[in-house]
Amino acid sequence: MSGFSDYEKFDALGLAELVRKSAVKPEELLDEAIARTERINPRINAVVLKHYDEAKRQIADGLPDGKFKGVPFLLKDLHLLLDGTITSYGSAAYRDNRADHNSTLTERYLAAGLVIFGKSNSPEFGLSVTTEPRLYGPTRNPWNVAHSAGGSSGGAAAAVAAGIVPAANASDGGGSIRIPAAACGLFGMKPTRARTPMGPDRSEGWAGMSISHVVSRSVRDSAAMLDVTHGPAQGDAYAAPAFTGSYLDEVSRAPGKLRISFTTKRVNGTQSHRDVVTAVEATAKLLADLGHHVEEDAPKVDVDEMTKHQALLVGANTLLALRQRGAQLGREITKDDVEKFTYLVAELAKLRGGADYAEATLYMHQMGRKFATYHERYDVHLSPTLSLPPIRLGVLDTMSDDVAGYLATSTEYVPSVGIYNMTGQPSMSVPLHWNVNGLPTGVMFSGRFGDEATLFRLAGQLEAAQPWWGKRPKL
Image (tube, rainbow, N blue to C red):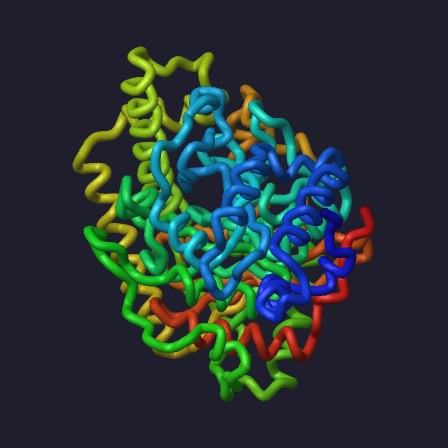
């Protein structure tokens, strides 16, 4: 069967509408997605696990009549399981980790009619802000293949930016939806803590800092995806504040006059790269022109204290993942099984105890209260997503012995996104600027805990005022 030549003219909702009207068949969309993968992927290395036969069986068995019926889709190769397929976490230690069940979120994607035909590249255990795992090699940015697509959802973002899929699963424990969305010129919403489920194998990721959703070209695809996936599952330890409306409906609603603070600086007070400053300042002007109250201000954060606690929460969970894999294999995971940075992160966690972990979670929750107070004054905070333009591949090497240099560069590049993983607030990267070299520079908006609706309304307004749909990389 032939593909569908107009595939890239539509977002995911648009493709699903064509299927609903019988203007195109799911088989044709899948054929087109596979053809694009085979043609484009060798240049960008976004798709690392292919489930073509499983996807064809999905269609042959009959797709549910969901909101995204027939739309090709990729899972991120991290945490989410699809029965009978491998999830490797970007690690050689998990290279043959074949699932015997679906994750709860996977079930919701399937119920929406999405056709899952592969998994996208991720750095090992999602620990890096660039996607360059030793197991699969680097994902390249479709806007310039010498540059990083970001991390940890770099494969997902590159696949969407390159036109392989209109939207793809992503996750965010320290910026991993927003970073690659910014680097690849996409829309990326990190929902409120616990908005989407992480079961049945766990209730939270990285002590509640991690959450799954998607990267997409259009705002409405992101909103509609959240409509079909949000809400707690049976047995979840806790849930996000209930939302009974439709996020998709919010996109077309006027946001009203919002009180918006902004900063062009990193959280440590240093100034971002001039391209980033230009992007934030231009966005602040656009917001003012749209009628919002905009003023320069930012919440205060003790960077060293935050980093100390964040590192422990990530490190302890990484150590647990290695112990669990060792138990499955019947042997201890050694430094030869994983990348140098992964092993160091886990080893450092051994030096701290249970009280330290409890202190870190307490600090995280206190940060949430502090930022809730800040948002009594402001509806939304605008800041850089990345503080540098997308970095070149090889700059951040998880096999390097220069750990101090690696951490310093990471902090300079993405200093602020992880704040909103600790506070649990919704936060989104919006593609409103490209620099003179043609590289995207996303800007980040963060809102009140539980209030994705305001962010979606604002994103819809910005998408209409300064559209980015026609901006496509020329691979």
